[in-house]
Image (cartoon, rainbow, N blue to C red; front, side, top):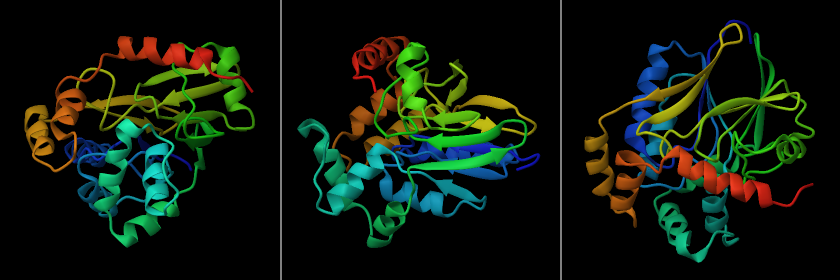
Length: 256
C-alpha cells in the first residue's frame, strides 16, 4: 500500500468514550485504513462499541484477541479458560450481544498481513504471531521473545495485549505495541498507533473528558462498572508497576 496511513486500534475493551475520541483523531489524521487488533471485548459498553465500529466510514479490518475469543467460546458453549474471578465479566458481555455480533466476531482471523510503503510486510497479531495470550514487554530479553516471533516472516510485527506501548527490535525483527485504547497501563488516555505514510511509525495518545467518560461507564450495568471507570479511565495502573509484573511473568514462561 503506497502512501497510505494505517491506524491500529487495540484493546478497546468496551470503552466507548475512549474509542469515540480516537476515531475523531483518526479522521483528522486522514487515515486510509484501520486495523482493530483484538480485545474489543469484554468491557462495560460492548453493544455500543460494536455498533460504533460498524459505522466507521473508513475501510476496517479486524483480528481476534483473547478476550473476544473467550466471549465467543462462552456463547458457543465451550467454556472459558479464564480464572473464575473474571468469568462473570465474560458471561455478562456475552449476554449483551446479538446473534449477528457473534457471527461477525467468529469471522475475525488471528493475524493480518499488510504491505505498507516504507515499512514492508507488516504482520498484525494480538499478542504474538503464534497465539493470543503470550506476554512480553519492552524489557523482556531477546532470547525469550525471538522464539515467539519465529515464523512471522515480516519486517514489522504490530501487537497489543499488554496495554503498554513500545517500539523496539528483538533480534532482526521490529516490534511495535500499539497500546490500549480502553484500558491503558500509563497516564490516562486512549493509546493507538499510526503507520505511514513513507515508513513513519507514530505511537499516539488521545485525551478525552475522563470525568465524563467515567460517569457514563459507572452508570452501566457492567458488573465492575465503577472499578473499570476508576482503574482504566481516571487512574490507570502506572506503566512501571505493570512492567515489573509482566516482565517477571514473561521471564518465567516456558520457552519453545
